[in-house]
Image 1 (cartoon, rainbow, N blue to C red):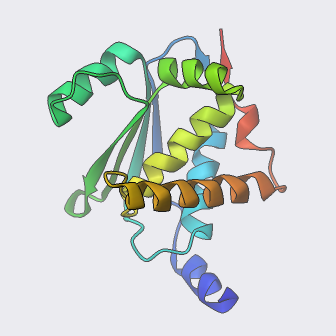
Image 2: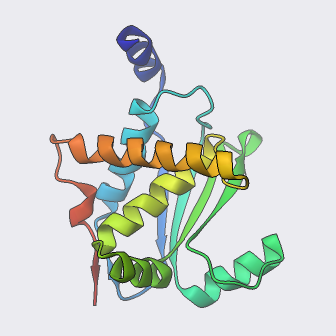
Length: 169
C-alpha cells in the first residue's frame, strides 16, 4: 500500500489555490489554507482528485444563504457549499465556507473555530473527490473520511497546524 501512495504522490503536482475572504473579521494565513489542500491531495489515496486550480471562499451567512437558494433551491443557511469544477478550464472547483455558521457551531459543540473551519474545508474537498452526504450511508462514509482527513492533518508535525491560522475580530 505504501508503494502505491508514493507513486500517486510522485505523479501529483501541487495545485494552485485561490483564497477569497469576504468575511472581513476573519484573519488567517493563506499558506496554511493552501498547505491543508496540498496535504489532502498528496496523502488521501483516491483516484478521483480533480486536477486544476481550487478556489476557497470564506463568506458570511447572507451570501451562503443566497448561493444555497440560487443553486440548490433551499433558502436555509448552510455551513459549506462545494461547486464542481471544469477540467477543460483546468479548474477543480470552489469550496465556500460560511464563517458565521462555523463560529456558531464551534461554540455549540465546544470546538475551536479553527477546528470547525478545518472540518468544513475537508468536507468540501471530499465532495470534490466524489463523496456525497445525501443518504444515511453516504453521510456515514463522509464522516469517516472527514475523521481520517482531520486525524491525518493533526498528525502532520512538519509545519504548524492549520488550527493556528484563524482569528475572528
